[in-house]
Amino acid sequence: MTGARTAHPMAALASLWRLVVLGLVFLLGIWASASGTLTAMMAYREDIAFLTVQHLELVAISGAIAIVTGIPIGILLARRSLGMFGPVLAQIINLGTTIPTLAILALAMTVLGLGAPPAIFGLAVLTLLPVVLNTVSGLRSVPPALIEAARGMGMTPAQILFQVEIPNALFVMAAGIRTALAINVGTVPLAFLIGGGGLGELIFTGIDLMDTGLLLAGAIPTAMLAVIVDFVAGQLQFWLVPRGVNPLR
Amino acid sequence: MIRLKNLTKIYGGTTAVDNVSMEVGAGEVCVLLGPSGCGKTTTMKMINRLIEPSGGRIFIDGKDVTEVNPVELRRSIGYVIQQIGLFPNKTVEDNICVVPDMLGHDRKASRRRAAELLEMVNLEPAAYAKRYPKELSGGQQQRVGVIRALAADPPVLLMDEPFGAIDPINREVIQDEFMKLQAAMKKTVIFVSHDIDEAVKMASRIAIFRSGRLVQYDTPDNLLAHPIDSFVADFVGQDRTLKRLRLIAVREAMTPNPPSVAADDSVETAISRMESHGHASVVMVGPHGKVLGFVRLEALRGKRGKVGEHYEKLTSVVRSDDNLRNAVSQMFSNDQSWLACVDADGLYEGYITQRGITHLLGATYRDK
View (cartoon, each protein chain N blue to C red):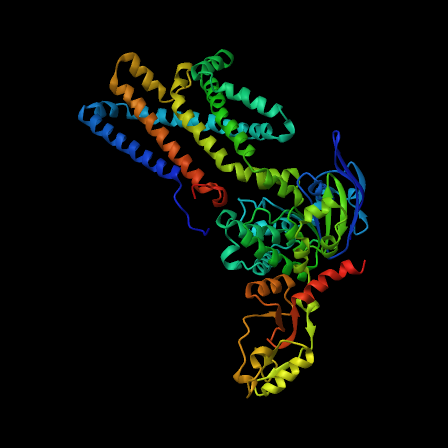
């Protein structure tokens, strides 16, 4: 085997997917401008700009909270010293993924009231799950031989964690963060329902008023944001995960 | 150098290692050999305290290992495992320098050392130092695994079936490379294996384990010639005497100062020389003593002239520093009962015969 890099099948699939999405966006654009919806949308451009920023703030804050808390929780759950306790906890968290988003937001609202804080809390909880689960499964999938070699060479448990376990779990962990962010961006519109703001304001108001232009003024930027955030996260995953442990490179 | 004293490991109710005592001298390669589950790996892992003993003591250089911090202890002992365990996130060079880096050695110096070590196992440093493990073949990875254990120059090396997962052709090559490294570095090596051929090839001493007990601890030749019981005899194989061939140099079975003839000797000289030695053939050498061919007594009868006009080509000769296994293999493949032995320059040194070899191998039984 030499250093020749063959394209990963997943990478091919991803680029195909990207093409399909671009094509759909293009068709949507043609339809939008032909039907006059685009002009209708443009009337809301100031709202769109303001709410997009708000939307991104919600994503950034809740995503950051989820990553910062999710990774340590995942590391803790993956410790072999936890014995059976780790997998059991991970299963409980797994159950958490079945709770509907709206239910989480509603629960957050009953505790924290209306506004951005409950929205951020709800989004963070939602985003936490994939981060934790992927951190656990990434760390669990590090081959035991690596850990044995590391111990045999005299690494301390901390050195094993930071030099061996985390670097080799990084790709799976990054995939979790990417999934989390995609879910997050797509869910932020619901934050409007508990007064959290964001592009959901245009979507839900559009629905209530049966105003397609208003509705699309919220929906299209939301969809575009989701694609862009996923693209950026994918690029970060590709370039930040070192070549030796990155199956895409 | 390494001394085990009544070493015991008990898991629950089962005794994995049972009262093992042995000593390995500095610079020796000690192969722990036995079927799986015999306690050989557990014994090895107790030396660097990956497994804590239930009883008994281990001394390295007279120092009890339980009195050393296990992390420091392990950094002072090289460790190679069958699954190799190179860190995929680190380059080859950084993998090799893991222990030197932990010990705080100068980075430049240890990278230089890594390059030297790569060269010693025939991996061009310029091409391989910056690669990642996944860009190497299995054999190349294990070469790196071995030199990684040597990077901080530890006096002791523990190897857990290091070449077990490598294909047979590469395994031979890597074994040879390791023997060369070992000849240069003279580490004290504990080597776990289940392969008797590998053990015979590498070991200064072999320790045979069976259900946690050390059954026989001996030099390879003694082990093969005198297995202590039927278990050991079965384990080393029915062809154990054939395995001894590899341990003996051709020189030991060789008859030195052989008669020879030159190309311009007369046929009569050759005949009388063969008759006086009782040989049916004699080797013809060049002016400096290089082997050129041979003449047979039978073929020369009734002929006249010079030896050079009647000689026949030798199908094969053997180096006197080669082992008997290769020599016998050549004899068999060429249907010959004798072989001419030459030194490194191809000069005629002596000859070996099948009879001489069987006599030599049998000597250990006659003396008893």
